[in-house]
Length: 89
Image (tube, rainbow, N blue to C red; front, side, top):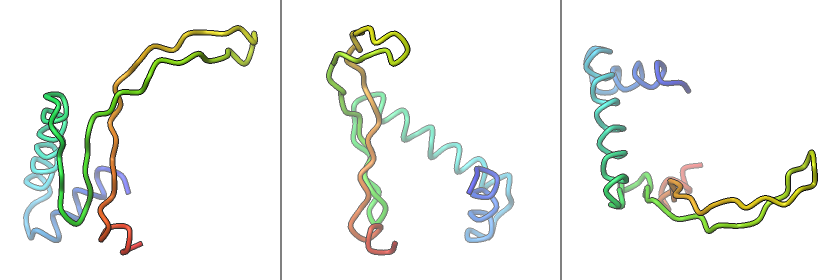
């Protein structure tokens, strides 16, 4: 499902126009990203939890040259599905 399909599905379920559904979807993603940027955890009951984790620095290998390279520490977004979401699948 791509963004346009998601917006169409939300518009049908919420009984609103696609424009309103698009604004709502964009606002939700923007709000989640702002919360994660501030270091907050975002929990959506019956769906899952988004949080920022730090991936430790490590040494990697360039497959073309076999040269060792240092990969710096980085922040990544982690999503953990809620139990009810896992059971639906």
